[in-house]
Every structure is written in C-alpha cells, then in structure tokens.
Image 1 (cartoon, one colour):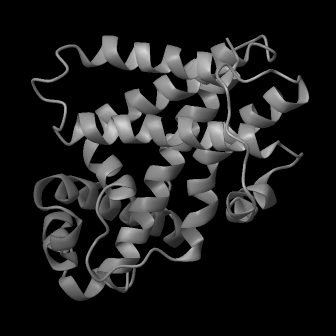
Image 2 (cartoon, rainbow, N blue to C red; image 1 turned 180 degrees about the vertical axis):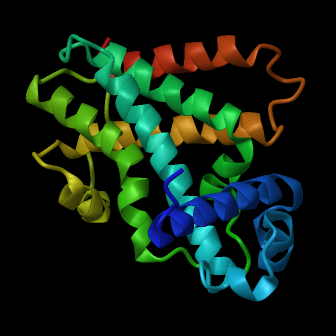
Length: 230
C-alpha cells in the first residue's frame, strides 16, 4: 500500500477530532466541550490535539462551519431538485422541509447553530459565508417572487422609515431589489420556520401539538399562502 502523505494524515486526524467533537457535543454540550477529553478518545496526547485546534473555541468554530455547510448542502440540494424553477411554492416547501429534516436528524448541531449562545464564545466572521447559505435560499426565493410580481397573499402594512432603515443589511445581501413589504413577509417566514423548529426540538410543543409533522406541513402551507407563491 502507498503510505499516506503528511497532508492526508492531517486531514484524517482533523476529521477524527471533529467527529469525536460532535459526539461529545451531544453528550456534554458545547460549553463543556474539552479538547483533552477528545484527544484521549482519539488516542492522542493532549498536547498534540492543540496542533490541530489551538483552543476549544477553534474546534467550536470548525463544528459550526461544518454544520452550517451540511445544512446548506441539504437546502441547496432540495431547492435544486425542483425542476420547474418558477414553482416557487414547490421550491419553498422543499427548502423548509430539508431544514426540518436536517434539524431533527442533527438536534445537537441545530442547537449549536440556533440555540442559546455558548458562554464565553463569539463566532468569528469566518462562520458567516456558511451561515449565509441557508438564509440565501430564502432571499433567492424572495427575489424570484419580486421579479415575477407575485402579490402577497395577505394585506401588508406600509413599511415605515424606521423599518426601512432597519432592513438595510438585508438589502445589501440581495442581488436584485425586493420591496420592503415583501422583504418583511419573507423575514417573517424565515423566523417562523426556525422558531417552529426551536419550539419543537427543545420540547416546548410537548402535549400541545400531538402530530409535529402534520402541524409543520400546515404551517408551511400557510406560509406559502401568506407569501403569495402558492
């Protein structure tokens, strides 16, 4: 067998550390993540692991980027699976159900991305491109709805100057203009999807909603109607 190169060994060891880190994430949570404990499980001396991740925060950042990219892959694949690109309702349903499926399959990673902040940790700017892949799917659909002049499915309040100014960051992320009223409606859809997921995954719907799948499907249908894409 051809011996592996140093670069290949590093890639393999990095993967092992991150996979073990994800298991520990499920067992102890991000705040208690320990590089020393991970090193022991991987079979490394504790000092060696720091050559791959100088601190716990560096490992957390790698896990965040990895998780965002996994979710981004799922979202983009779901959107791309809809052959009729004018079927905005079909694309929206595909995207949000992909988010729902990924979150339920990876609840601890979802909590790392969208749960309570980890004490003492601040995500660096390097996490932004990966995080933006998910929100980008919503923005692309909003732009497509604007370009085809889809009327919103419910009356919209006129956007005041203060709200227009508040949306400046969203406008900068758009490739083409979207009316403020539509932007607000899509932001509401985005927050509804993730708010629903958080309530479901963190147990706040227990005994209140008896069939999560049926309820989520209805919520998605309502959002399709409100967005005017159905």
